[in-house]
Image (cartoon, rainbow, N blue to C red; front, side, top):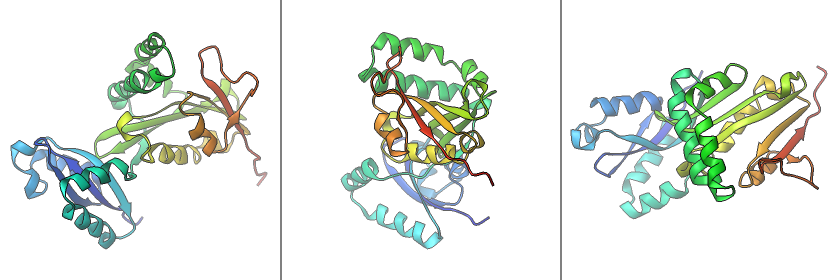
Length: 248
């Protein structure tokens, strides 16, 4: 398998940015934080660091060219670039050790994002329901994916059979950290779901979409299930997508 080549940006403890190149973002962050990474991040005053941006390229020269251009930018232009540029995440399967960080990610989404469309009391109740134990239990029957930027979980999505059906599936717990929304993390997670066996075998896929997420799911071909009465008793919009499966 050919290596992927990444240009990445770290946010350092002293508030500065560091741009670098790697083929393994997660390993590289660990090296920086252990003091064995680049000379710039070795001083204790700059650690710990957090990877806040990454882009993937087919070749090393392309990645190092992006690194070079970023390092030449003045601080304000770097900040502008980081606010608008899309990021490349690593997508992997959920592990039980992710449950605490993942529960915190969901809590932030309920309280910071979904609370703009729904009563805060309802969002607080949901945040309390999605404990690490609940997430580990969900993973027993669902395929749960994690989007990582370095060693930070920035998004998650899950898919499982719809009431044990072999022909229908449902997407659940699809969230991206607030500060990484509109940076293509959700698109990368959806592309992973589209390759999942629960997705490819299904004739129909349902998703309970928040009001904010409706447009996102429409982009991937989902339509409102009941246009005359779109929301369920919790205020979520029931959307669905029908697929014609190949007999091959």
